Length: 196
Figure: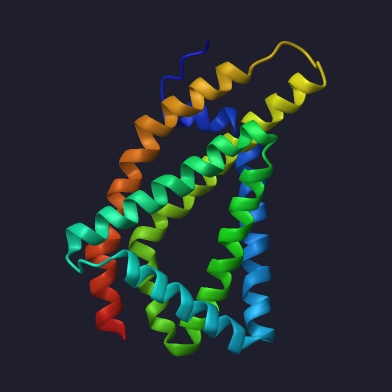
């Protein structure tokens, strides 16, 4: 099995799948924003539901508790879109598009209330978004190998791709998601309160 000497070498190997995940995400982001533009009341209702769900899950408002809840949620989401590749990548595609649509609607609602609030997403978003796109790309790459196996196209590389993806996930994705969660629970939250 090839051992990648740097994360950039691995990202280069999955660059086509990373491009696909990026296109899917921003296309679905536009769909979510467009839907919210056409049906603002429904988007506002969904936003309020999401706020209630988050507040119910985070019973302790301390930064540590919030960071833990955010970290576990993002960890699970990224693992699902990555491991979803074992199901031909269907779950990976569904996951990235669902999150894109929801974020597009949220961006519209937040922008309508205060465009400055969007800046509070930046500190953690610049870490979270690339990580989620990479997790999806790993899932898509894995899904391609599963499809190749079913079509008996060449030597099976499923175990190899799964192992490489898990190594990257543990070595880079998990620590970066932890960092993003800490930033979101501290810097981003304070920015949001200040900009309201």
